[in-house]
Length: 120
Image (cartoon, rainbow, N blue to C red):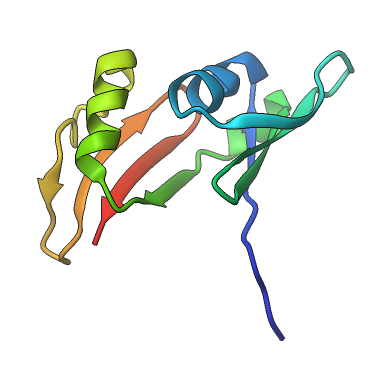
């Protein structure tokens, strides 16, 4: 059995919150969208990473995912995110920090999802 990618689904009460985080802040691009339906969704992509955003109030209340994005230049990612969207920095990990397991990390969060950025 061989797998080539993991594509998470993230559920929002209001999908525009997810678009602000992933498209506006992290610069993912919208590959497909169906935003004007009873249950809006879209497929986002950046550098071969894909995820699906859904607007579903009940599932959003049941799921609060934390994602990890690895990078080779965490200083650059932190500089861009902290300059453009400082309000998203997570209060418990709001600067690049060396972790006991060897990774350098910082984190952001919106109303629905937490994202840790790592450089090993």
